[in-house]
Structures are given as C-alpha cells and as structure tokens.
Length: 286
Image (cartoon, rainbow, N blue to C red; front, side, top):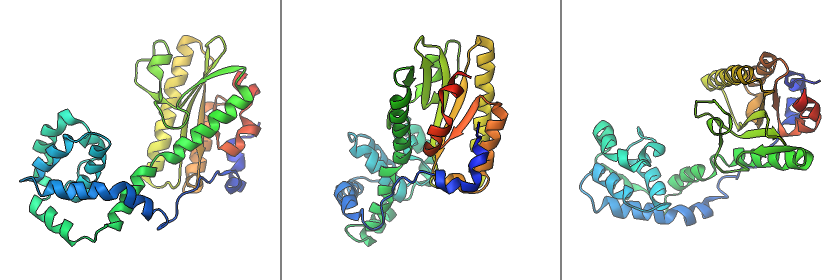
C-alpha cells in the first residue's frame, strides 16, 4: 500500500485548492456587513467615560452585534485580549482588573476614530478575515463526509460536523475516555464498534514552531488513542485528513509521513485527492 511519503515528489498534484476571495473584490460585501458595526462602535465611544466602560457597554449588546463590536474593540482598545476571551460575559470584570491598565485611553480612541476615512476600508478588510476564518476547514470536512457516504454509507456509521458544527467529543462516544478530546470524524461498524477516529485540517500556509507544535500534539493523540484501544481491545485506527498548499511548506509533509510510520499501519494521512487510492475497506478492516 502506498504511504503518504510516496506522494511527496508529486505533492502539488494531490493538493486541493479551496478558493479564496481576491482583494479588493470583497470590499463591497465588507461595507454591507461591517459599516453599521463601526458606526455603532463610534457612537458607543462617545457615550462612555472610559475604555473599561466601553467594554461593559459592548457586552450588554445582543449577538451577533456584540461579537463584531468586540472585534473592533480589540483592534482599537485592547490587542492583548482575544475576542474569545472577551466573549465570556461573566469574566469581564476580571479582564478589566487584569488587563484594563493596558487599554488605550478612551480619548485617544476617539481621536483615532476621527482620523480614519469613512468608510474605513482597511478595518473592514481586516474584519472580513474573521468572517472567512475556518471556512476552508469546514469545506474540507464536508467534502470528506460526502465522499465517505457515497462510498461507505451503507456499510459504516460516521459522526462529526459536516462543515461547521460541534466536534465529536471522545469522552461522549468512547466508554472510559476521560479527557474532553474533540475529533472531526468518528467511524463505527454497524454494530457500533468504533474503528476510526479522524482529525481534519486545511493549511493555507504553515511554518516554524507551529509545525512542531502540531505534529507533536498529533503524536500524543496517537499514543493516547492506541493505549486506550489496547486496554479496551478495540480495532481503532487514526485518520488525519489534511490538505492545502501549507502541507508542502517546511517539514510538514515529512512530519506527517513520520506520523504514519509511527502508527505502523494504523495511522493514515490523506488529502482529498488520495482518498480513492488509499482510504479503502481493506485499510478500515485490516
């Protein structure tokens, strides 16, 4: 059977390119989506006495407006705090205590807002990046689920987010698995015996320390899952659905090939274009 490393010399032929929008083509859409958000942010800055008060007033807004306003807040007031952190309303007071001394003063925020053009196309373009973040990964998993159901839908059960959606939590589907470990793909036989745990990722680009962190974390997953499989006598395999031009950068291709070697036949790494050749019933049941 071919291995992931066997494809390296022709790697570009096996990469799936998921289209990105060209700049500045999406600016008209950005104005429609974010124009009113920026206007509301300006209005709020003119009604509060401090940047901390501005954050509190934003958290009182309903979603989806609140999340969009928090993204503008982070850019203008607090680049130290992530939007995910700011979303947790009950933690706002502690965030202000811990990070408030780093907030930009509200007077300076107002001055900076007045110096920007209206509409502020630069900020809108940045905010548009948030809108499309994760979309390629969703398209990747959706394509896999469609392929799998067309080829194996009558033989096996498959769970996971078909595109955007909640991950499969291994502690909810594997008896005795304690950690809250998310997975993108969970395949079982018709008798509900689990046979494949899968993780999906689309890499537009990749490099440096992120490569080491990713592959090291994946090796830990393999070790933990195989240890569990040995204890519970389950025929578990691990599947990494990875795609995108980032796979061809740095050491990523070699690192994933090393994961396959580490798995000794029980780990498979595939792009979408490799599925027909490699993701077979023979492998599922071997």
